[in-house]
Length: 318
Image (cartoon, rainbow, N blue to C red; front, side, top):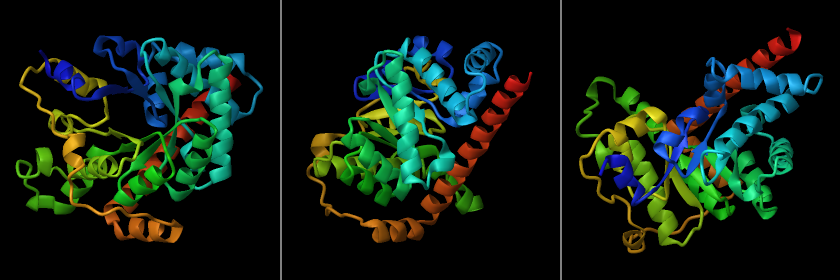
């Protein structure tokens, strides 16, 4: 049995891509997208017509409305392939605006529902800022489920659990990147692999905390750099994995053992904690890695959202 099939025995496997034509070969349960992945897809010849068709069908509408039509169009194609859910992201430029995030989420869900997709099959993806978590808290009360992304700090995970969020996406690879860059020549790749990887440790801590205290929020490890990180989190609720790494797992047959276990987490000697807004902002500020990677991630998604905007404007002008 290959490593991908072994992993599926312990963990729900999710494909991290906007490239829906690649999905079927890996048979993932769900799929996640983000502005960068959608931008990458529409720049490929096989997806360019889909973008052009969507823009043409909504010519004359506001730019942000057309962008949402494009995102949902990709989501609808993905849902033809996966049996579960798709994650569709709210514009990262709204990451510090609770009301605007809620409004955009309402529009995305309305587009999916108009296309005959139940809201249970959609996760609205929102950055794990205080404002984003508050928006998701409101949306969850309406039965609109959310995926809180760009999650790097324990305080972000705790706040999401307290807010009743459906799912969080802690970023393994970006945490690893930060610590590796920070260590420079002192970095020891072998010593910092597997369970010792700082990104793996972060997700393990969150998983253990949630299971210990009966928090229903799903933990979906994201942003992987290698299969070692993935296998070290076998047993996590979900793992969202790029097509390249899915292919590597499919091509390998070394044994994969369960690494995270809910029953074992129940016995962990840890205390329950909570964060109000002031405590959340302070805890995030105290974590240099999380502060830098959250800000960097929002900026990068905003840049790619801007590039998608320009592609749409160019198509409208043509």
